[in-house]
Picture 1: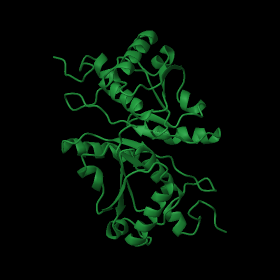
Picture 2: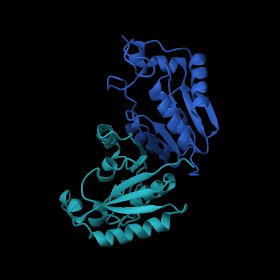
Picture 3: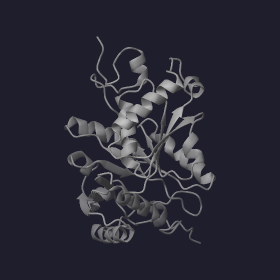
Picture 4: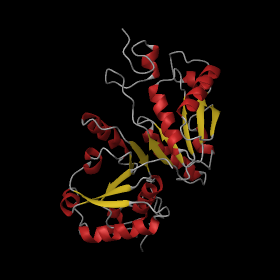
Amino acid sequence: MTGTRVAVAGTFGPLHDGHRNLLRTALKYGDEGLIVGLTSDAFAQASRTREVPPFERRRDELAAALADLDEWGRTVEIRQLTDEHGIVSDEPGVDALVVSPETAPELAAINDGRREQGFEPIEGIVAPYVLAEDGERISSTRIVRGEIDEHGRVRD
Amino acid sequence: MTGTRVAVAGTFGPLHDGHRNLLRTALKYGDEGLIVGLTSDAFAQASRTREVPPFERRRDELAAALADLDEWGRTVEIRQLTDEHGIVSDEPGVDALVVSPETAPELAAINDGRREQGFEPIEGIVAPYVLAEDGERISSTRIVRGEIDEHGRVRD
């Protein structure tokens, strides 16, 4: 028991093994529960040219993946996220944010923002990348492009 | 219980509240034990112009700080470190490395090295900086320079 309440956030669509590793890491460390931020359609689409599956579909697949990966019986709450740093900037009761290596450098700015609001800074938990069969990392963009499937297998 | 064996490494001299926060984070998450890497005098001195306290003194102060901070009764092993990435590159049985924000970017290279040796990649746990009274972060270099004390109080 470490007494840790974690947050994790993303667009999670199409859901792939990199997301599953991030979610599994959040479940493992979140022995006091986890908050999963899921981007709204407007927020998810604003930073992308590729099409993103609709919120309800992403939410259902996310909930199914969390249920499937949860070996520990964690308390999980999925929240719609409409802007960057949504949960971590307005939730004093979060201890750690689970991130991918590419998001890790944002932790310093997140903690500066928390200190300004009088919140305790949080720990970052960096889940390693999951590599596809070709040695490059798995990403939703690569799946949408048709290069690999959700498990990182190269498509013919 | 998350089943996590953690590693943390440093020179830890002079020991300060930033180190204590790093060690406390390692103790909190290391419910399956922790390995604390402590740099040898030669390795510590190689990258510094300032004088570093001798190994035995650093080891004794480190052990005392760990005993003082351990609320959980963790199993702790202190190991002498003679090169960079010492523990994490030759220890398959470590799940996570506790790092400061400045060391977090090294996690990707550490995991590339682990994959090459056939080891599982590890998670990174990033402990936030501890700020001194003047809003800058606490560091051993600033203490040796006489700017602040080990708790970040500004010296007159």
